[in-house]
Length: 196
Image (tube, rainbow, N blue to C red; front, side):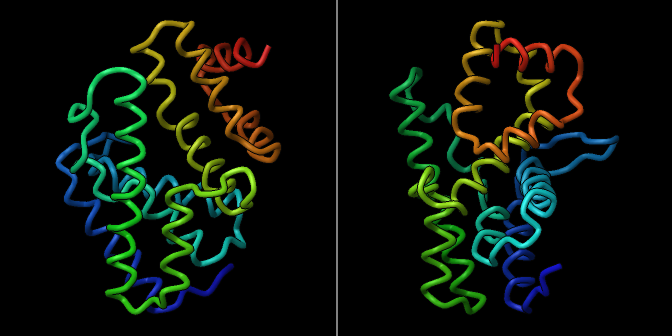
């Protein structure tokens, strides 16, 4: 288990406070949470299982992956692929800048800040094992915690396409973890179709 420095603890507390301001709520196991706070907790939980020896920069990036996301809603961008890509690109910059400001305030040096920001932006995804680890964790969180509800809103063809794209983003280790998820029968069936 990694020993957490006081500034790491301060950074996580600041990330959590920022995400606790999310006006969007999600009920999980009978308890209401600010949506992005719960997402951050799920990301951190998965990272601890998937890569327990992760670097401090990666642990910070995972915790800040969606920091204050509600401030840049998808509805602010045009419909369609180009609008979606612009939204995602701007979100990555926004999350990295927001996290970087907090990291500077709690005393992190520029090198760690730049590294965490690069991971949040998923730079060098297929060439950087830590960026790949973050992507694997994000995909695992999506599959375990969000895919079932998501699948109720879209047709099977779209879901299979999304699952195939998700699978391509993941490493072999991520694939193994995903195949071990206890998904509901309908969701597991969609995953099996996507991988066939």
